[in-house]
Length: 107
Image (cartoon, rainbow, N blue to C red; front, side, top):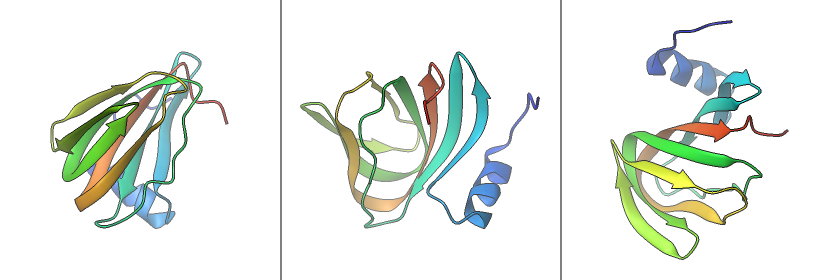
């Protein structure tokens, strides 16, 4: 098991796979990944069965969590309860976020 990660390496791995999301850690208690949405893009995600935490590495957008809405930018931390509707929108700059699920995201 790898214990150390660097965001640049993870971003490159994700880009090489041409996917929006790259999971880089999975243990029973949690999973983690890198999620990237392009400027002007659409966030296709749906509510998850797990609680999740986002950390915005770079970029700028707005986010809806339930009935709350707020701008997010580099350094923003967002918590989303399991099963709650949420999405990024009005993506002004390519958005790269670290995503943590607890327990691990069910596939």
